[in-house]
Length: 288
Image (cartoon, rainbow, N blue to C red; front, side):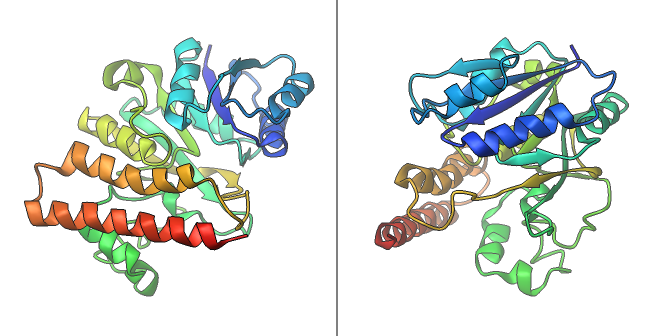
């Protein structure tokens, strides 16, 4: 089998259904693929509705919300494809995206992970689809919005590579987990997603390990998806999700950067993320 597409569902019936429908309607002529849908105990009837609508796909029903990393790993464990695609449930694949992605990565054996152009509903680029590994310095510039103020600066724009042409095929540090195509041989070498990351940060960590193994992370804008990012709206969100976003920063830092920076830098990073998490949780608590 050429391709295994893994999608994680959690209470997103309409988005997930639209995502699967876009896969089925896309140009996959000559491409042998499977869709594996992993449900994280939605308990809202969404997975039953999707199962009825798409009876031929493989569905795994977890009995608890195990997080994004664990759910994807469960899907990977039963997958049959030579290439594994992690695809967010809130995405729509373009007509030639899947076929184009597999064809490109097959022709370039040095690629350990392939990403594509990711467009938001507004039509603008999702900047997280091509980025550098987060460091204390570029993270600070990003937090201060200096990359927005000086997008052409290689110093201030390093976090999301704002100075790199969004239409240029290039080797970068990191792509996003919304669309991440990885050869099985690479997964066998570097391992699956780190389940210490409940959600957020697992894609950055995977790219870091893949690149350490000697492979390239490639941004391939000849193909694209549409990403309904934060589609749940601006209302009150699950505090666990908010906490996971900030906790992922500390997990990544302690795993990969702990010995690269001095104690003061580490204190600033850990303290800073802790404070930002508390502010975000307090702000979320005030929302209706």
